[in-house]
Length: 454
Image (cartoon, rainbow, N blue to C red; front, side, top):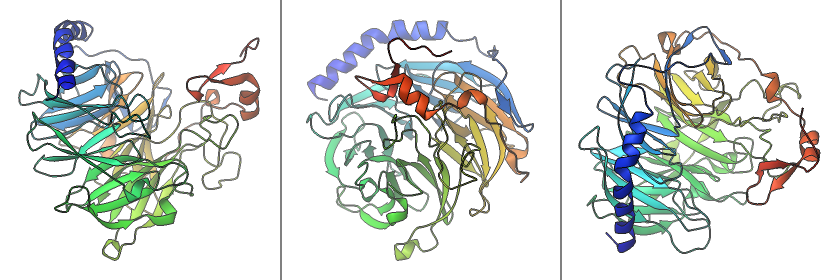
């Protein structure tokens, strides 16, 4: 471990005990549960069972435990009773986001996002050999060049033996060797076909499927790879081509994450900012849940099959594809989990949408849950529920909601969620009333001096 990494570990160790005690003191006792306000809306087949307060961005599972990352580190939930998880451990970390926590065997990876350009990104290698007591094994600073857009947003295992990672979030994918978990090594970077876009050059996420294909997604669409002896030269199998490259009807910002299900690649498109409109960042797009055809993957072809957008789409355009709506909420599709033909999709402040993709060209909404005061970043099917009905959310504002959808959503009955009046605004009024933040631009617009919003 280098000197800087050792210093970071020492700081965490010094702060960890007090933070851990404070963390547990703020949580409910085992089995106690937490009351929560009624949702803004939910379909009759979706039920909120319990709620664990906090903040959550991502989640992964090992045995009967869930490892939740948020802005306060890692929280460990015991999900032996899938409908009543309890907090059993935590690892405080001074990190930002890591919305897709990955694990392999006894190793969990958390990445602190870059602060700016290619500075500030740190990868934590965490041992979960003791399932309820995560322990940092190593810290690897990434980047440090100070130039360009560096990697560091998300790290994912690309080998089933847990020996290699791809780190996304930058213009290039960074490859990390983890053969010795206590001594991770950056092997360098390569340019992914999924990052190649004239509008937004970035890779965002990587998934290893059951066939050994590594899927990478980003501003350039989706690309399938096979690893080779050279870790910086994986073999490209196919891409989504022009159809998936920003700007296109299927990619107005980035293809966000993916899961392969047989001959179908399921993808969410994130579209939370419109840079070509005034004011930028008004979230008038809402992203999509997409299905792509992999039946000709061996010929290097991936073609779109179908897409689904929320009820906001087409409200003012008679149903036009990828239309914009004057919304004032953070509204894009985000992380999802697919099982047995139904995907549970986090849609920020539009909650969780349950989508039946068994006919990929006709994706159908079969359930929804829109929490009050929530921002649902992700949804996950519980691996410990034998009935396949329990879903956990990772909510940036609320923490974790535990939901049950009757029969796992396999009714096939189409449902439609309401569009809340408070979600709708006026782009013209927004432009007149707000100015961009000096630091964050229109991602955090500020009210112009002298104006007020009733």
